[in-house]
Image (cartoon, rainbow, N blue to C red; front, side):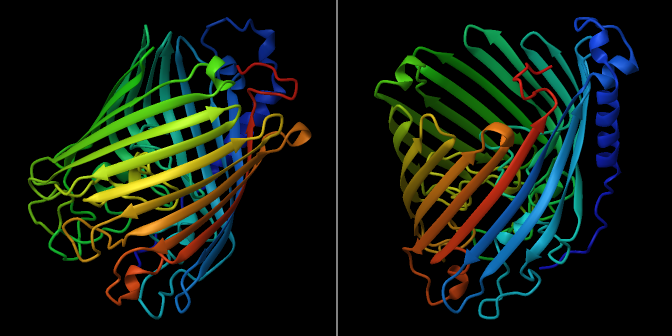
Length: 483
């Protein structure tokens, strides 16, 4: 499905940041005492911090014989600048761009199923499949205040929570706009949360109101099997997030609540043991558990069942656990998840990846109910070298693809195997990282003779090679401390 093209954002912000960085380096902020907190544009801007990333991403999706394969080779960069603080206040701004080096024609559907590419097109703009040449987006524009263990941010920012997160598996990440704070209270207590009114979903190059961002990705079907149509139809003032965390001898107890006004409330509880540095050398065990409870709010976003996100009266439960054994850089972990048959586990995919222990990159269990899932992971961090790798495998027993009440996206049961490797270059190439991810998924369910349930879902492989280079003016080759 194609959407009206909009002109990409201008890149003047990036040019401005480059100018600011060059100007800052031409000055000598060290001439002022580091502890001076006087108001001076020279001090605030010339003494700021400049950081960014260069990324090259190659992806290839190999579907079952007779179905279309896809590929994408993209490159891009992001640039960010944060001023020096004045009386605890500072300003941050940044942006990024993505461009195509070589890729499939994503506007052409598969001739057998009529389906479009699911993975590779996400390196660009999923709402404009014919627009890949030069995409830019404003990513940061905020004012923050810091004092002791308190930090409050107003504006566009990146959040890292169980359900709101960058989900950094494409060229750009998911971002949010609002008022958000972090409050450390000592004795192991931490609080955070805020009110959010805009979102910039991964694989898009624009900002949406919270309600408008719900449905940017595939909308699936209603519990009655009709094609869902809630994009631009959800009514919500925004998203309220709250978290309290306590870390002690018994582990870390984490409670989150995500309240989408007029749509959905999600309560998330997680406990996990925390290993000490001494335990990192000797063999030790870690354990964790999580509980998720969801309830529709009002009409779930719209009184029309086809246009609502969460059907009126719906609720769902999910339970999970893990056990892991570690020693000297080697880790073995076993995970389990149960989503009950009460209803679908829902949360906008545009805002982050699954928080389930059994989550494996390139697939989600959001939109499903009555799920039994198990997965295992072997990871190895080679001591003395910048290489780490992991091998994971999982089995996911899902409801039938035609059980619309509990299977929103028509995903069949499947088995998945992942291989992942990261290498961080040392010495003069410090900051450069190579990342390999290979995913294989095999069908374990009934497709009812319909290849639409197979393409981009099962009996397929997805291969990724990513190069990232990170740089930060707060660090130098001699290992000086960040400003």
